[in-house]
Structure formats: structure tokens, C-alpha cells
Amino acid sequence: MSQPITITAATTLAQPRASRPLMAALSLAWREIIRFLRQRHRVFGALGQPIIFWLLFGTGLGSLKLDYAYFFPGTLVMILLFTAIFSTISVIEDRREGFLQSVLVAPLPRWSMVAGKLLGGTALAMLQGLLFLILGLLTVHGLAPGVSGVIGAIVLMAVVSLALCGLGFLLAWTMNSSQGFHAVMMVFLMPMWLLSGAFFPAQSGWLGWVVRLNPLTYGVAGLRQLLGVVDPSAVAGPPLWLCWGISLAFAAAMFVLCALSARRTTRGDLL
Image (cartoon, rainbow, N blue to C red; front, side, top):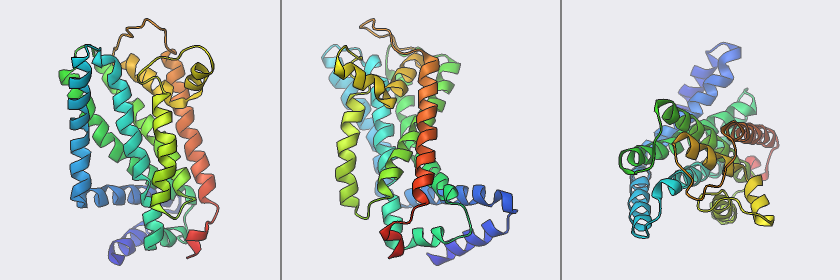
């Protein structure tokens, strides 16, 4: 295990000083992808989960005579949500194995480590999300995107995945237990997804304000518009420019908070 780390460090230090942080980030992102590909159970889960969700939601909602196209973007965001956030559990594993400590003492800015982790997690989330998107475009009636709509949806999926990876990193950085991470994340995951307009539009009252304040709401609404989904309730959603703006601001805010959090040394980094 020490040999790949030595090669990566030597390769990084051989680069010009200005490009070292970027090379380090790309190396860490590539490490996340390689580790994923070497774990066959994760590859099986990544390929099987979108297919299972596609079959269950498509068949179940179809039997209830509900418009699956309306729920498809919310299901797509759910896949991105779970995959992106739980991929950041590697932060706890790397700290426990000692790899994170070796990265932290390298003569590189902390934000490059954060960027590498987030890019790797985003790539893994996009792997599942793209598979589910392809299945939906081929089989779900009611999705009517053009070429620009599909490209825009893929870009928005990447932005949402990056933001969610940042949320997972922010919480994982302060924890030393993967069990505690799972417990805390479940408190955030399901409410955040259910209150994103995935299954019901924003209503009046305090619940409607919670839905509007949830940044994930604008990712779901943006995907609906980009994929050409017609809202059967005829409730006007947020405009597309607002969906892009809040999603980009969410991703940027998560990256900045993660970079600031990584500058603080935790107790686990000293072990």
C-alpha cells in the first residue's frame, strides 16, 4: 500500500509548484475511483441499485396509475444523495488507516485534499445517476428533453452531487466512527430528500417554507424542467435560472465550508 502513495507523492512534487494542488486533488480523486473498482461488492451495488429503483418505482407507481415521469427526477436525486454522501465515509476510513494523516502532512494546501475527495465522490455518484438517467430516458413515458436538456441535466446532476459530497465530508470530518456517521446522516438524508419536492410540491404554511429553504428542492425542480417533465398539479415551480443559481451556490458553499473545516486539526488526526 505504501508504494502507490510514494509514487503519487513523487509525481506530485515533480510538477511545477502552481500545479501541485491540482495534481494532488486529481490523484486523490483517482484513488477513490480505483478503490471503488477494486471492491466488487460496491461495483455490484452501484450497478444494481439504479436498476432496482427503476423496476420498483416504475412498476409500483405505474400500478397506482401515477405519473412516474413526475417522480423520476426526485428518484434520480435520491440516488445521487445516498451515493454522494455515503462515499465520504472514506474520510473516516482513511483516518483510521493512517492514510489521511500522511496526506495532511504533505506540503500542499488542505483544499486540494478536499477537492480530491469531493471529485472522487462526485464521480461515483454520477456513475449511478447516469445509469438511472439512461434507463429513464429509454423507458419512462413523459420525459421529453432535447439534446440541450439532457446535457443540462447531466451538468446539474454533477453540481448537486458535488454539493452533497461536501455535506457528507463536512460531517464525516468531525467523526471517528462510521457507525456514528451512518446514524447522523440518516437524520439528515430522508427529511432533506422528502422535503425537496420529490413527491409533493411546496405547499402553504411552515412546511412550504421548509421546502423552499431546502437547497435540494431546486436541484429536483431544475431536473424536472430540463427533462421536460410536466407538473400534473399545475403548480408553478421555481424558474430554471433560480434552480441553477441556488444549486451552484450550495455546491460552492459546501466546498468553502469543507476547506475551512479541513484546516482545523481533529483529535483523530493526532492518533
